[in-house]
Amino acid sequence: MIKRKITSIICIILALLLQTTIFRKLALSDVVPNLLLVVTVTYAYLRGRTSGLLIGFLCGLLMDCAYGSVVGLYAFILMTIGFVIGFCPKIYFRNSLVLPLILIAASDFVYGLYSYITEFLMRGKLHFTFYFIHRILPEVVYTAIVGIVVYRLVVAFETLITKKREEEV
Image (cartoon, rainbow, N blue to C red; front, top):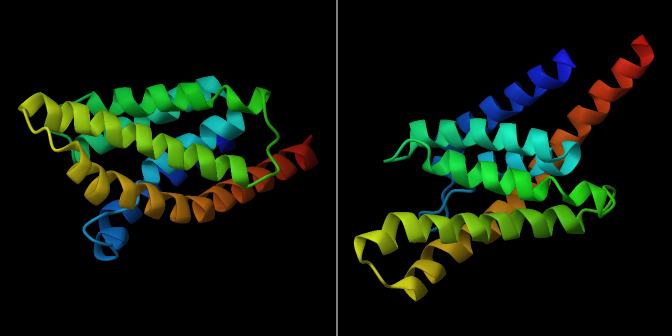
């Protein structure tokens, strides 16, 4: 149990560090993949609603500290996404990569819509097509591509921890 929590925290910290440092330098058309969203979706898909909710809240708070103008906005967005994605393990199989790819892309699209509504629409900036073409769509594609690699790494860590725990028992 403690190893799972430590692994989750390490993955969250690594995602934050990669997102704010290395991927800032690898930005494509000024878009960076949202690794904290990928971590939230991955853990919600693997562990369920409660883990998705808690990890989404923690990742969102870290995003609020790093990028946010209002504390709690990203925490609410990622917490909601994590909770909703947490229902999927009961419906679908975990072995396929297609569903995680779709979930990551859909979650990033929802995240982009929330960001547009709260950051731009509330300020009277109504150019949704411009924002969609230049921000949301490139970020969805970039996050989905990088998200598959992150998803595979997190699944490998989870499998490794589960096997070690079964060997100890």
